[in-house]
Length: 332
Image (cartoon, rainbow, N blue to C red; front, side, top):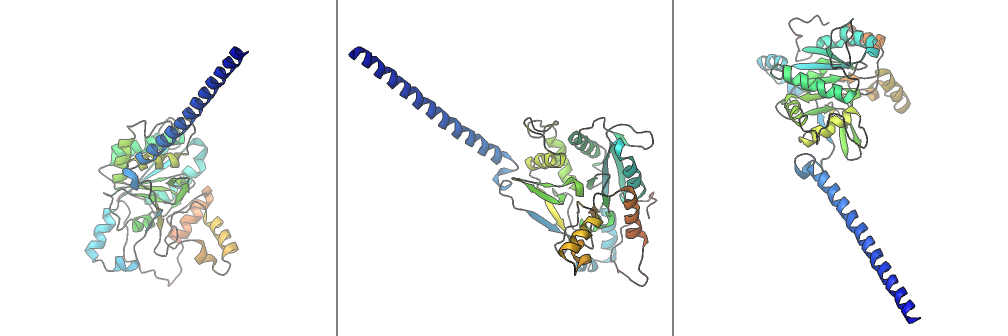
């Protein structure tokens, strides 16, 4: 009987020992996972500064900043800001494609449509993919390879976006394109801050240069996105740029109002009527708004009329700076 009890005690001790080892293994494994996660976070960007980055706000110049410039300085600035526009399109976007082609895109120094496939009715840079992230990657790569020496700012938009390029140039007036700018309407998703593609995305030539290099590193900036889940193209862009030390910055006017809008004017006015019934116009949008989104083709033409054609007689804005259109442009 003693031998049986002794055998049972031995098995019990063995089970306790194995259980203890299992618990230790679980604890060590958990600690290892935490360690790997922390290392991963610290690798993002240039050191730990990127991880502790706070929400960035950058503003347009004040009127005084421009009025104090000499005539020669104004002329030089009006010619120095060169914007290349990338409009991403698919065959289903033909109506908006036509509207953008006939309206605001004429005000870019150069605008090109990057399409998922060839379409007979319009010229485009054919990317041969329906994947939006791959379209964004390839469009940026081609733009950098072809135009890195001709343009210093690169504006990417969807075909439902309306942009006032002169207001964009005014916003960029005192920004140095040799610095890494990544500008638009910023949104925070967990620890990631990114520019919402619906409002348009602006990259300086320096940011595009860094982006083109990180494209060559599939571990940090994979062509097909993450393995476990797929991020939207604007979030994936932010991840890739963060590895290069380029962080999203929210664009605002001198009063702190957003200038890149992810909604249409109509939607913003409805919100203003509900939230600020006594100040609908002031509560709606910035006077120097750059983009609006969610526009149907006819609304593009309405915006074009309102922005570039309609004038209030006797009302003089006295703008101190004029952005001249490209030499071969037929813009308004």
